[in-house]
Image 1 (spheres, rainbow, N blue to C red):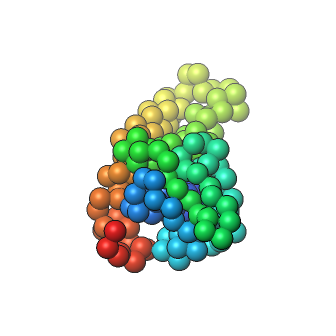
Image 2 (cartoon, one colour):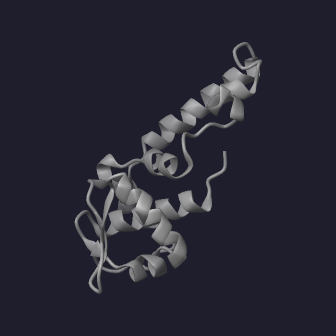
Length: 145
């Protein structure tokens, strides 16, 4: 499993919105600059985040993006899997039908357990936690909130 650019950029976007605060309108340009996300990627990413009910997209000259869900209830796992699908470390875990041996293979069980542990770890990290620690926001120019 490798985190895609879309997944990485979605995490950056959500971390920045969480840093700014729930309910705060943040312009597209601010996110592009502060989270170092190319504008075309941001346009694609926010559509998925909005469909998932995490953010609201506001159109117009005074538009932007608003985090509408409490960052304490949004996990890294949710955002990653929203962008790339369910995390699995090997095809035999995510798509067991591709390997005839997956039901009795010892290595399959290792991949399955490792995937479960990674998912559990990511599910335990919230965007509220990430936004508290400015060291976790290396690309952002830190300003007073």
